[in-house]
Length: 151
Image 1 (cartoon, rainbow, N blue to C red):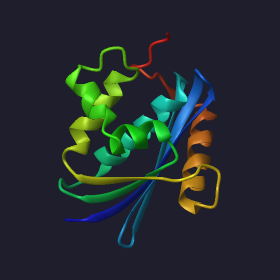
Image 2 (cartoon, rainbow, N blue to C red; image 1 turned 60 degrees about the vertical axis):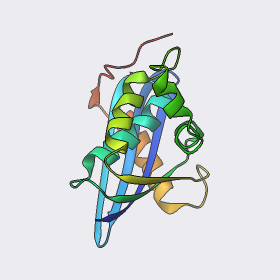
Image 3 (cartoon, rainbow, N blue to C red; image 1 turned 45 degrees about the vertical axis):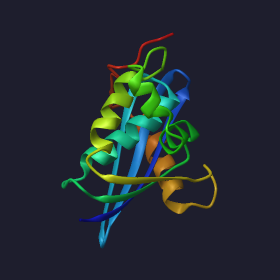
């Protein structure tokens, strides 16, 4: 089983507005950076999408993953068990059910430990993810976030 360290960040320029995610994956001597921008989305969607894409990028099931995020929304939902209660209630009255369901499918294929880090602080890789996310949100190659629905 591979040991993988993942850093993720999401950003929205306006909330809602254009947004993007940034990911840094580290495993042994390997490093991979990923990012993508979207025309209309929210910050929380980008934070959660970054986590989904990062875990989906792993080539083998059963990885030992330490995932660093500055999103209390994501980290607390998992570490405090909220998302599992939401799932039992079919995500009734919860935002982003499409991404939470996507997350749970891939989350269960690995051993994932979430660590919250302070955003825009001294965590080098988290700052790199922020740069990637903002650059993606500002790019001309923006996709539609098909799961985003305005309130």
